[in-house]
Length: 171
Image (tube, rainbow, N blue to C red; front, side):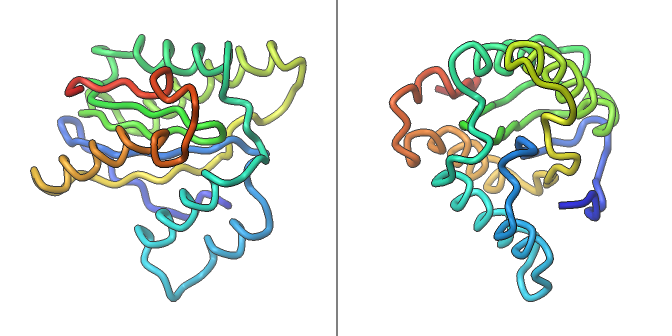
């Protein structure tokens, strides 16, 4: 899944961002990402549903889950105002108000966590998939739907540690 998407970035904008572990990308996801008959949002929903049932690249648990969650929280308020985050076994959803360029935010999140996670897992190389999905929030309804989606993602997937996987400012 190459970095073919145009990323919208504007300080003060609310962003919904999803990024995945490199090992969670498989031929089905590659084929789906190249499907020109689906909108980007429709593709992302199908990818999320598939990823929730996938065992590939599911490193985001236990100590690794804690590292990702704590690091994302630690970037507030310098890089964004964090609204919600859900750390799934092989991907992460984040909702925030930008304080910095989106590319800088994603580098701060993915770079530091990849280094720490690779050290724990005794591996080298790319931990996160290079690309990420971002969607600027259009209005209050879109904001509320996105927040609820992030909040309920681990519940919908039936994860037993769901309470550790979600942080939000509106519980």
